[in-house]
Length: 119
Image (cartoon, rainbow, N blue to C red):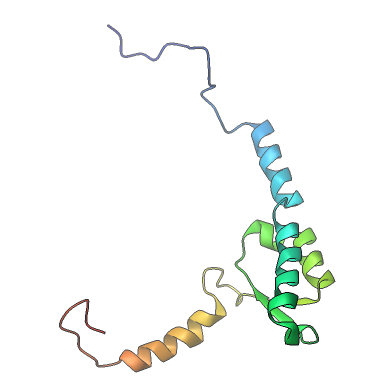
Protein backbone atom coordinates (compact mmCIF):
# COMPACT_ATOMS: atom_id res chain seq x y z
CA UNK A 1 0.00 0.00 0.00
CA UNK A 2 1.31 3.45 -0.94
CA UNK A 3 0.47 6.96 0.20
CA UNK A 4 1.65 8.44 -3.10
CA UNK A 5 -0.96 9.79 -5.52
CA UNK A 6 -0.52 7.98 -8.84
CA UNK A 7 -1.18 9.64 -12.19
CA UNK A 8 -4.73 9.04 -13.41
CA UNK A 9 -6.72 9.81 -16.49
CA UNK A 10 -9.70 12.10 -16.23
CA UNK A 11 -9.90 15.55 -14.76
CA UNK A 12 -6.60 17.44 -14.81
CA UNK A 13 -5.03 18.33 -11.47
CA UNK A 14 -4.45 21.93 -12.39
CA UNK A 15 -7.59 23.97 -13.05
CA UNK A 16 -5.90 27.37 -13.06
CA UNK A 17 -4.53 27.40 -16.57
CA UNK A 18 -3.77 30.24 -18.94
CA UNK A 19 -6.65 29.04 -21.13
CA UNK A 20 -9.14 29.15 -18.23
CA UNK A 21 -7.90 32.56 -17.12
CA UNK A 22 -8.41 33.93 -20.65
CA UNK A 23 -11.93 32.46 -20.85
CA UNK A 24 -12.96 33.97 -17.52
CA UNK A 25 -11.38 37.30 -18.38
CA UNK A 26 -13.21 37.35 -21.72
CA UNK A 27 -16.50 36.47 -20.01
CA UNK A 28 -16.09 39.34 -17.55
CA UNK A 29 -15.13 41.81 -20.26
CA UNK A 30 -17.97 40.75 -22.54
CA UNK A 31 -20.36 40.93 -19.60
CA UNK A 32 -22.84 38.45 -21.04
CA UNK A 33 -25.46 39.05 -18.38
CA UNK A 34 -25.09 42.72 -17.53
CA UNK A 35 -26.26 44.29 -20.78
CA UNK A 36 -29.62 42.47 -20.99
CA UNK A 37 -30.18 43.11 -17.29
CA UNK A 38 -29.63 46.84 -17.71
CA UNK A 39 -32.06 46.92 -20.66
CA UNK A 40 -34.60 44.99 -18.60
CA UNK A 41 -34.07 47.34 -15.65
CA UNK A 42 -34.74 50.39 -17.82
CA UNK A 43 -37.93 48.77 -19.23
CA UNK A 44 -39.16 47.85 -15.74
CA UNK A 45 -38.55 51.37 -14.44
CA UNK A 46 -40.48 52.82 -17.39
CA UNK A 47 -43.37 50.41 -16.79
CA UNK A 48 -43.59 50.53 -13.00
CA UNK A 49 -42.47 54.12 -12.39
CA UNK A 50 -43.50 56.09 -15.50
CA UNK A 51 -43.06 59.39 -13.64
CA UNK A 52 -39.30 58.70 -13.56
CA UNK A 53 -38.99 58.70 -17.37
CA UNK A 54 -38.08 62.37 -17.41
CA UNK A 55 -35.90 62.23 -14.31
CA UNK A 56 -32.42 60.87 -13.92
CA UNK A 57 -32.41 57.47 -12.23
CA UNK A 58 -29.50 56.70 -9.90
CA UNK A 59 -27.99 53.24 -10.10
CA UNK A 60 -25.98 52.08 -7.10
CA UNK A 61 -23.87 48.96 -7.52
CA UNK A 62 -20.71 47.55 -6.02
CA UNK A 63 -17.22 47.65 -7.48
CA UNK A 64 -17.27 44.19 -9.06
CA UNK A 65 -15.19 44.06 -12.26
CA UNK A 66 -18.28 43.38 -14.41
CA UNK A 67 -19.94 46.51 -12.96
CA UNK A 68 -16.92 48.69 -13.76
CA UNK A 69 -16.30 47.36 -17.27
CA UNK A 70 -16.21 49.85 -20.13
CA UNK A 71 -19.22 48.20 -21.79
CA UNK A 72 -21.33 48.35 -18.63
CA UNK A 73 -20.53 51.99 -17.91
CA UNK A 74 -21.22 52.89 -21.56
CA UNK A 75 -24.57 51.07 -21.43
CA UNK A 76 -25.51 52.87 -18.19
CA UNK A 77 -24.86 56.23 -19.86
CA UNK A 78 -26.67 55.13 -23.04
CA UNK A 79 -29.78 54.30 -21.00
CA UNK A 80 -29.64 57.67 -19.27
CA UNK A 81 -28.96 56.21 -15.84
CA UNK A 82 -26.64 57.94 -13.42
CA UNK A 83 -24.13 55.79 -11.59
CA UNK A 84 -23.78 56.49 -7.88
CA UNK A 85 -20.16 55.67 -7.14
CA UNK A 86 -18.69 54.27 -3.95
CA UNK A 87 -16.65 56.57 -1.78
CA UNK A 88 -12.94 56.62 -2.65
CA UNK A 89 -10.69 54.18 -0.80
CA UNK A 90 -13.73 52.34 0.58
CA UNK A 91 -14.66 49.67 -1.96
CA UNK A 92 -16.52 47.68 0.68
CA UNK A 93 -18.44 50.65 2.13
CA UNK A 94 -21.50 51.86 0.29
CA UNK A 95 -22.43 55.50 0.78
CA UNK A 96 -25.68 54.34 2.40
CA UNK A 97 -23.61 52.68 5.14
CA UNK A 98 -22.45 56.06 6.40
CA UNK A 99 -25.90 57.64 6.63
CA UNK A 100 -28.29 54.74 7.16
CA UNK A 101 -26.31 53.04 9.90
CA UNK A 102 -25.40 56.29 11.62
CA UNK A 103 -29.10 57.04 12.17
CA UNK A 104 -29.60 53.44 13.24
CA UNK A 105 -26.83 53.77 15.84
CA UNK A 106 -28.34 56.97 17.20
CA UNK A 107 -31.77 55.37 17.45
CA UNK A 108 -30.41 52.36 19.34
CA UNK A 109 -27.98 54.30 21.53
CA UNK A 110 -28.21 53.39 25.21
CA UNK A 111 -31.11 50.98 24.66
CA UNK A 112 -30.84 47.70 26.49
CA UNK A 113 -32.46 44.49 25.36
CA UNK A 114 -33.09 41.46 27.52
CA UNK A 115 -33.21 39.00 24.60
CA UNK A 116 -32.54 38.69 20.87
CA UNK A 117 -36.27 38.53 20.19
CA UNK A 118 -37.05 41.85 21.85
CA UNK A 119 -37.64 44.63 19.26
